[in-house]
Structures are given as structure tokens and as C-alpha cells.
Image (cartoon, rainbow, N blue to C red; front, top):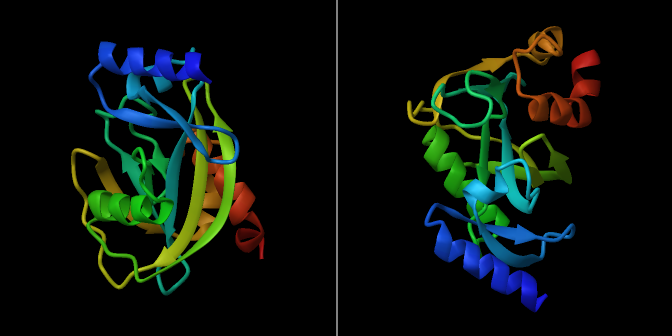
Length: 183
């Protein structure tokens, strides 16, 4: 453990970019690493993120189209809100912060749904997934999102596997909502 801590401290000094907490499979913080290292496709250091699925009163799911300036999956439709948890930050605080940053809304009601590990060719994330509603109207911040809108679950189902959505969103949708779309 001491060697890993020394190594992560060394990385922090070498790379001044945003620092992510590195966690074990249970979510316990075990170190820090720069964003560039967590996303380099080699380290696969597990780092925590929050996902929020915003539903309308009609049961439609708000999705964001990732900005073309994003380093991961630009131009793909994705979860309503997705963001990294900061070192030492509580999961629910990260959820509120990211929802405010990405959509300009305050969550009125949210529910924890699932925690799982997602691995892509570039990274490994410990995902804390939530659903909820808000009376606020989402506001698009162009540095984060190109556009956003509410989709029916049937619309989402019809577009799965066609390269419209991020792979992580498709996985999470199948895990959390597929039964709702089929009914």
C-alpha cells in the first residue's frame, strides 16, 4: 500500500491535471491519480462516477448529447448527467454538484438504483447510478453538452445498437430500464 501511495503522489507531482480518487471495488478511496492517467487506456485505475437519469412527469428520460469537444465519446447521446466524484466528496454531493453543473437544475427527488463497475477500452469506473425528477427545466451548457431532450423509453429502445448512444448508456439502460420499455 505504501508503494502505491508513493507512486500516486509521484504522479500527482508530475501531472497537474484534475485529480481523481482511486478506489477499490467497494468504493473505498485508496489513492489519487490524474485524469490523464485514469483515462489513458493503460492504467485502468478504478475511479468513482455518478450517473443521474432525469425523468419527466410523463416517464420520458432526458438524455444529453455529448459535446464534440469531449475526449471520450463526443457526439453520442448519454445519461442525463454523468460526472466524476472528487477526492473526499460524498456520492450524493457529487450527484447534486454534477446535476447543477451539467443541467443547471436542483434535484427534488432522487433514488439510488445500482452500483457497478464499467470498463471501456480507456478506463474503469465505479458507477453510482441514480434516478429522479426535478421541477426545473434543464439548461444546456455548451462546454458540456451539444443538445439535450426527453426521449420515450420506446424511442431509446428503437435506437439501441445503432451507434446513437454511448456504450455505457446502452449497458446501463438495459440493466435498469429495459423491462419498463418492453411493457
